Length: 86
Image (tube, rainbow, N blue to C red; front, side, top):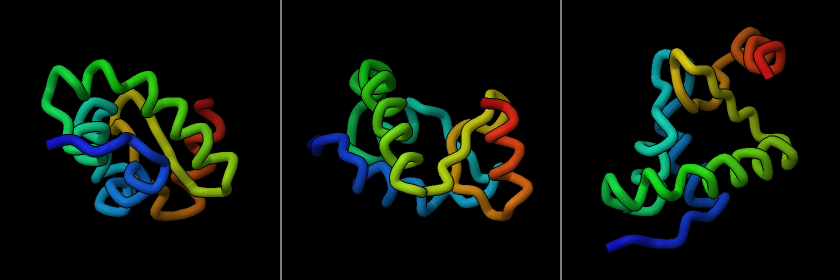
């Protein structure tokens, strides 16, 4: 059973992915946040990216890199690296 993909749900799922070494792909994060299956999660990636922007604008330290996926910064260095990447 799936739930809506919301900023609160994404933030809750990200709380299990702190630090680059615990990063997660967009599809997996969408699946974890809303209980989506693999196909639904793939199609929810665009919505997930929009939610990540909202979370960042709200001051949450949501990071993402091609190598590690999405994660919450564990320290200032990870946050700075993501800012430089973006």
